[in-house]
Image (tube, rainbow, N blue to C red):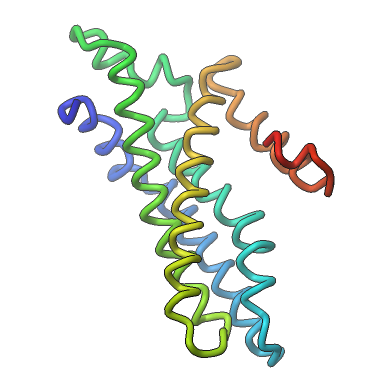
Length: 181
């Protein structure tokens, strides 16, 4: 399984647009956190993490990382180089999903943990940092699986974009439809 993970991992390392997107969204999250902190409210982190970060930055960072792994095509097309050499399609797909989920979890977990002190959370923040990092990592891994699933549909993996739009539309209704996404 590890040799099959080399291709998606190499694609992630060699994807400057995906990492640029991650850095830009990270900058946005930090700017929102610092803005909320400057307002002097003690619960700024309670607005930054679920709203700006969880609702906008985290999905878009993961969207960019998934795009780098599947090379903005479908999952089937992205694993074709290794299946052409005789690898199992299912194992190659699983390797791609695991790599992007782990990298997304590490990146987004770190960002989520870093936003707690940047937002001006009141001490002691150790528990908040751990919880925010863990929840961000878990959310990123879920979004990675969700978006990779989306690359299985449509022409050139357009289902990834459709799932992002569905998540934003249904996820902002304030009803039970949020649970579906």
